[in-house]
Image 1: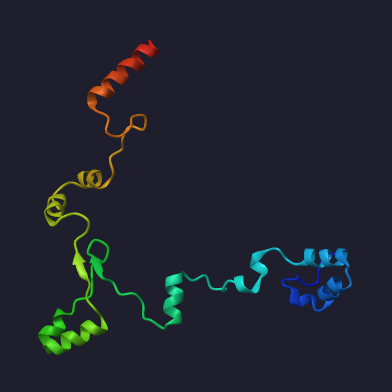
Image 2: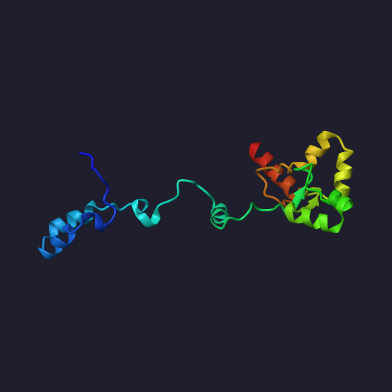
Length: 163
């Protein structure tokens, strides 16, 4: 037998719960309470929206705020950041301020590496750049920070065990 409707709170039972208490029918009272859903997701105060928005996006939608502005632009990821300098040359200070209010410029960085390192890497082979950018593959059997002499002594111990 499938239940027709899930009982979520006491108001759906109407006066049956009150009559069971007044008539001292403990079995009926216990049965009615057992019929109520114990799943918190069924209760009205815990209903989730159909749209799975993050809290930041939900607050922006609720208060009708514009999208978040980019404060820092990375040239390695975005090759064409916002540039309002042309408006300054064409229209002066007021035109630049207007464009800055409409489309603000972000602070432009050249990536995680300093400029000098990037210039050196630009002149290197692709293999050297990849080796520099990838993290060093440490020996999984040796913890980080192990001195070379300690590594040799461990290798000697292993060779004695294997021999």
